Image 1 (cartoon, helix red, strand yellow):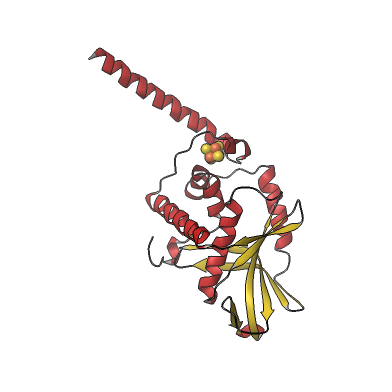
Image 2 (cartoon, rainbow, N blue to C red):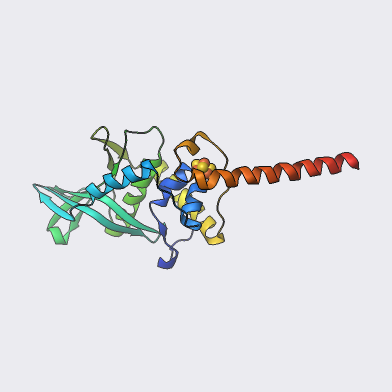
Length: 228
Ligand code: SF4
């Protein structure tokens, strides 16, 4: 990956959840600009609208910023955090930073709102970690953990930003930049994820067609080999 990306090469941060779900889905949305709404995406938008109602709220020692824009030159991405909480600290810590506008030392905690209940896969964790890495770069601080709020359970799940998770975020954005630069939509294959994919109507007929052409070519090669 490049050391620093110019702004005109920034990718959408939220694309990491599409890419982690299915590389081809990300390519169809972000390279080919195709999009299809289904129930899941509509529900997701409603949950996000609630998270984005207010911009900044002060309550006790916590300042809550909604719809905060974030970016990273190192990752070459920009996007928006549903919620970033600033927790006032009484003393200096490795994971806290002095914020002039708020007149004190604060630790920073990103919170992402999601529909449904906690999933076993790490798609949501990757997106949250990417937001935290942007915030770390912007604020010159360390962020140890954040939370994912699941609308169905109305509970937060803590996500620790381990070196492994951060490394995975870097690796994925590196791949996404490579595909984007080449203008290549990743190939896909039918998996159980296709049942929950908002682009299945667009994608699956194309996949089947490609498979038919592939089978035809394979067959033609086999026939040629038999003849010779
Ligand atoms: S239909 Fe399946 S292969 Fe195609 S984009 Fe969706 S998840 Fe990926």
